[in-house]
Length: 211
Image 1 (cartoon, rainbow, N blue to C red):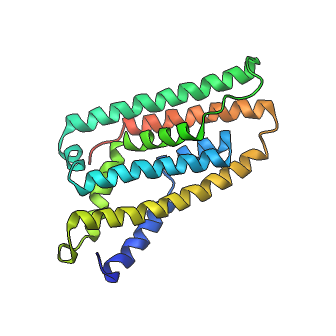
Image 2: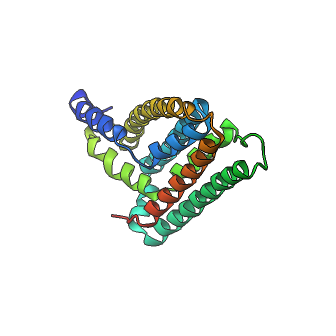
Image 3: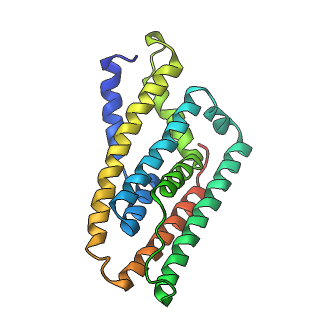
């Protein structure tokens, strides 16, 4: 286990990074704005699930493959782009259905489905794997115990902090959206905005590089 001298700068860096808006926070905001607090929290825990996967991959050396293999990086990135565009298409179709009156109420994805989508959105972003692979080892002390165990512990701390931040963001976004959701037109535009967010995340991932 790393000592307090190592953990203090780690916690400060982790807090700063978790408070910085990124793809995960944007996804959480989009879900909370269109489906409410519970959906935003489900998305937050889905992101946390994906981060757990990345932490285990980093701890046992699998993420290093992405860092050294262009083919592996591009494969995961392509899968992530396709999935984000699929989510964008679903959000856009839901908005169009509202606008044309084909449905009287929005089709609500279950919280379990949102949780699973959060995991996939995070896991299929190779930049997350590379970030964790680059960030966590900086605070590992080989003399303090098994390196893999230290990475798992640090990754867990980082993930808890990120999940708390994302849940608070979800609650705030849902509260703001609730003030506007009474209007059918605004509901349509919230769906369209969500679709635009997913397209933006896909474009950001498309231009991401390994380094």
